Structures are given as C-alpha cells and as structure tokens.
Amino acid sequence: MRTVLRLQTGEARAMIAAAVEKSREIGVLETICIADDGGFPILIERMDGARVTGPQISWNKAFTAATHKRSTHLFNKAPDGPALPGNEAFGIQLSFEGKFAVFVGGFPIVVDGEVVGGVGLSGGNGEQDTAAGVAALQALADLLGPQGHEVIVAADIKK
Image 1 (cartoon, rainbow, N blue to C red):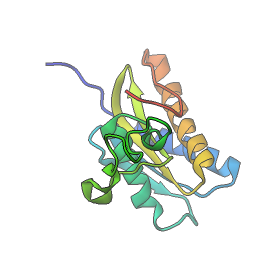
Image 2 (tube, rainbow, N blue to C red):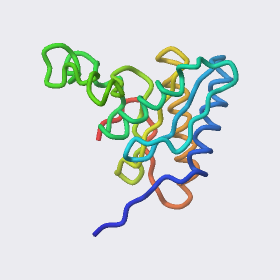
Image 3 (cartoon, rainbow, N blue to C red):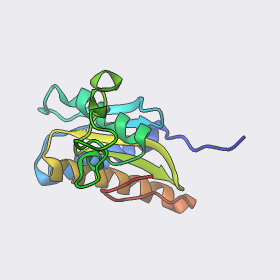
C-alpha cells in the first residue's frame, strides 16, 4: 500500500480563484474545471458571460490532462506529438466518446511528483488559456509550498 495525495475542494477553489483573477486581468471570459486524478470534476466555474460550451470543453481538457498525465497541447506539438498524423496516438481524440482533448488548455496537476488531477480552461485563445492555467497551478504551489509540497508550475508538463 502507499499513501496518495488527493485534491480537496478548498484547494480547487483557490486554483479557480487564481485562474479567474488572471482571466479578468487579461480580459478573457473563461470556464475553469479542476478535476481529480480520475478526470472527474471537483469544481467547475463559468465566468459570467463565458460561452455555454465552456463547462464541457474545460472538463474534457482537465480529464485528458489528469488521466494522460500531460498538458493537452503536447499531443499535437510537432514533430513528435503522439496525436499527429502518422504517430502512435493519431485519432485518440475520438476515444472516450469524444471527451479526449488534444489542444491547448489542459494541464496535469503534479504534486510531489504525482499527478493528482487536472485543470482545464476554455474561453480564451491558447495563450490566454495557458496564462490562466499556470496561474491556477501557481496558486496551488503557493498554498501547498509552506506544507512542504512541491507543485509543478509550467505550461509543458509531461509525467
């Protein structure tokens, strides 16, 4: 047996608050999903005025990042992105009933070297989704750092 870390609602709230703050700062209306390590939502928040498609898209990105342990855009990053034509995972976005997202906006949440969940964002362009996602990861790092935990804060994460 081993001990595993689990994200709690309070941590998810802090991450969403930071992503919302960053989104307001850069002038974009986002939907943010924080998912557990199985890709199931802990919290989803759609900013007032954000697109109605945001909750599903952000969940898909959080699901993909958490369960495949990598930032979603890395699936299509040339030249070796596994979902690119001719590579081993080409077409993977059709699996899980279309829930698999292979574009920017999903980031695994890595604490002490273990993927404990995912954050997914929908509403901005790739740069905006990334800025808000990294802000969410930084908020978790700020929250857990004093407790001695290390959180990866980066756009390109692959475990």
